[in-house]
Length: 116
Image 1 (cartoon, rainbow, N blue to C red):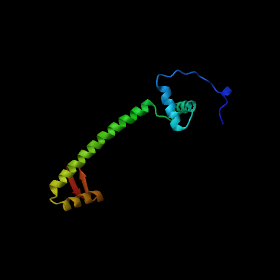
Image 2 (cartoon, one colour):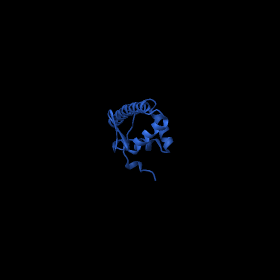
Image 3 (tube, one colour):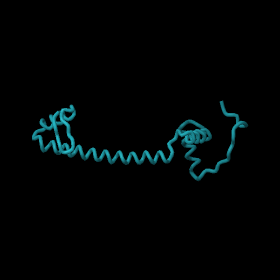
Image 4 (cartoon, rainbow, N blue to C red):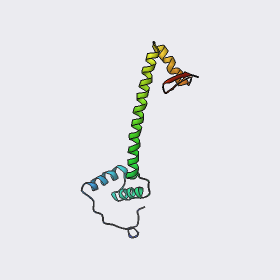
């Protein structure tokens, strides 16, 4: 059932070049009219259902920080692997050390390695 046009507010809107086509494309993809697409998008942004530019900035910042943490973690893992290769002469011995670490029987902390 459509909305009664006599009971809705109307507003003439000027769009920058190219925006009408983008709205039309989005409306076609979602199976809605252009009007419904515009109204839905506005309601989402005003109701807080759409992330604000500040929220998107925070997400980008967190993604950057996560990438740094991941790089540090990978570097630590590579250092631990190199250390284990120096300690254990065979692949079997290296695997035993990794198994002990995974099982929690061997803890790697700073520059010390200790058995439980």
